[in-house]
Image: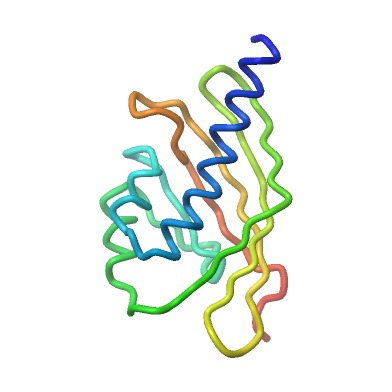
Length: 132
C-alpha cells in the first residue's frame, strides 16, 4: 500500500467521524444509519456495553429518541490503517445538549471498506467522566 493510499483511507475515515457528528446534530437519522456497514454495530457513550447491531436496528434506535438539540464536537482523531479494506480509529467527543455541563467521551471505531465505500463496522462510545 502506498503512502497516498494510506492517507486517502485516513481522510475518508476521518470524514466519517465528522459526518456522523454533523448528521447526528441535524437529526438526519437515515443518513446517520447509512454511515454503518449493513451488519455494523454501535454503542452509545452512555451505554458502552449495550450494542445495537445492524443498520436497521441503529436507525430504529435513533428514530426512537425524543427530539433534542445537540452539538457534537469531535477531535483528536487518529486513524490507523490496517489493510486496504480495514482501519481503526479513536476520537474525543464533547457533547452539548443545552443547559448544564457538556458530556465528555470518546469513540473507538472499526472501519470497513464496503460496496458503498468506507463505513463504520463498529463504533463504541464511552464516557470519560461517567455520571456518579
